Structures are given as C-alpha cells and as structure tokens.
Figure 1 (cartoon, rainbow, N blue to C red):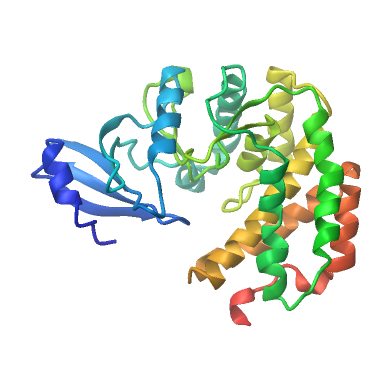
Figure 2: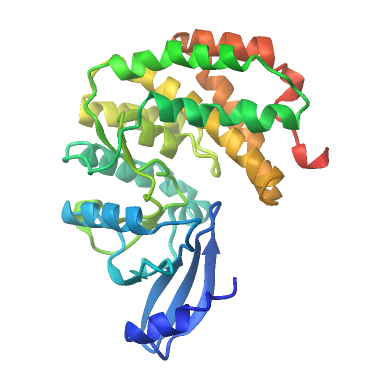
Length: 326
C-alpha cells in the first residue's frame, strides 16, 4: 500500500500539500484507497490506476446519486490521467463492522438499507448501459471458466448457457421497472454516517459498475452477502419489507431467486479467479457460503433448468471446496 508516485503533487495542487497519506484499503480490483490527514480535516484518496481502472464511471454515478439526495462521496479533486480522485471521507463505521459489534441492530440497519433501495428504485435511472442477457451470461460463465477447472471438472458449457437462457427470460419479461442497479450493494460498501436524513444515514460506496436492470438484483446483493452471514429469517423479513413498500411487479420471488443464483455463480467464479490468477487466496474462504446460497436459490421452481445442469455437471463432493489446499 505504497502511495502512487503522482499522489504528492496531486494533493499539493488540490490544497492538501501538507497532508499525511495513510493506507486505508484495497479491494478485489486494482483500486486502492488511502486516508489523507491534514490537521483538522481528512479525505480519502482513490487510486484507480490506468489502464486497469477508469474512475470516470464512479464520478458519473456519484454525481447522479448526490443529485437525487443520496449520500455518495463528494468529489474534492480529480486527476483522470493518473487515476487519482480525492473524495469526501465517510469515516470508519461500515455496516459490516457495526453489526459485528451490535448484532441486535441487524434488522433495524437492514431495514434502512432496504428502504433506501426502494427509494432509489422510484427515481430516474442513471445514464448507464443495460444489465442485459449478454452481461448476465458473461458473468454466469465465470463459474465453469474458473471454478470447474480448479476442481478438475470438464463440464457441458453449451448446456450451461442454454439453461441460463431458459430462466433469464423470466427476469427480462416481467413488468418490473428498469432501475439503477449499483451491483455491489452490501454491508462492506455501506457506511453509517451522521445526517443525510434523505439517505437514512447510509453512505454508498463502490458503485462504479452500475447498470440499468431489475430491482431484485441489489436486494439479492444486500441479503445474500458474500462476506457476511445474513440469517435466512432476516433475509425473508427484508424481502417482505421491500415488497410491502415498493409493491414490485411481476413474479418478484422468481426474479430474486434467478438473480441470486446468477450473482452467486458469478462470485464463485470471480473468487476462484482472484486466487488462481491474482494471488488473493483469502477469497476462497467465502466459497462455502456462496455454494450454500447458490444451492438454496436453485431450489426455486423457476430455476429448474439451471438446477438440473448443476446436478448433472458438478457433483456434491466438488462443491464447498477448500481450493487453496489442492
């Protein structure tokens, strides 16, 4: 977590020349974050190095969310040539750690997060591409591309694509409105911040990959969290809360299960890739949870073609694997 070479000059030009640069976090991408201290003020430096990263989508979605009254980080300064962005600092209280310390607050905090989603889904969608069939299929294909070889399986990939084609039609043809889908809306990307009553005191992060899609997707992302265990009864209560306040159209339960299965298959592939290609074995620890969630989603009748494919191609003893030990 050494600061990028261009950071001191960038900060000086932005009026933060005497600031201290401290490591804050990295993530599954090439992005890194640093906390910037300057006497009584602080900010966050995003390092999104080109050509691997492009901060412009983040900036556009941040502007869109702020314009609609949601709490995305304000932009203090930017240097797009070097991929540097100085951001408003939302502090240290992430929902993940807060609930670890205060589990009795779980339902109240998740209810706020679900209510925020319902509010977002009433607003005009951002000017971003659609979450279409090609994207769904490309993401779902990460499981046979990365996980299956890692466990020594050669699988029916055309059959996998055909199974997803059969079920994704249900999502595409229902009457739900097309909404801004943040795509990574979960407890590690939501901050608890004072004020911001319109956004229920919740600060939003990591939304640069937003697309226009189905309202069930971010609800799945929140409640079938790859990194935090959400009890099935809490998940069910929050789905009911969303349905009560948003009155979604179409077969929402089917769409939720289909998008849950698609997302969980994608994440199993991504986390395997992070280990095999990028040397980040810590993500393997989450695979058992992801398989549990995926298998639960596959029990929905709407997912029968995909469930049949998994039954025929990935035996039970090839799931829930501690891959790093192979």
